[in-house]
Image (cartoon, rainbow, N blue to C red):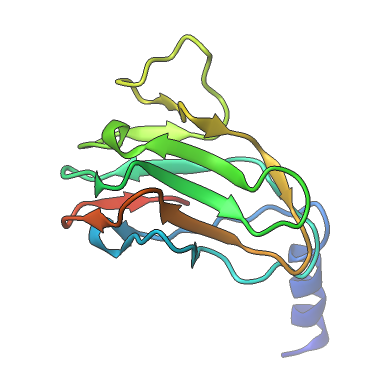
Length: 142
């Protein structure tokens, strides 16, 4: 790489830049132990939005699908939705919906939906509570 490309890379990764993480998770691959969505953060990272979308099958098994951090401080569970609310073709978001949204509509997560700052050296993870996932349905949390 030349100097111009190196400078461009530094600007793109600079403070204040935005990026997305895309990961498809199969229901039967969701365990009750935390699994990684992201690599370890090299600095503080503002988690502004999480969007999860299910396919035509949706999730099965487990009580709650949870996206969490392994932060040392603050709320660990960032996004929690009942698996029963993540059936076929559902979209749930971390922010951007109103309190009047119902559990049967595409809306904000009904259990926990809290933006956070991921601490340096920490990562985003996911798990199910109570039981492992079953079936071939997928969820896509960017």
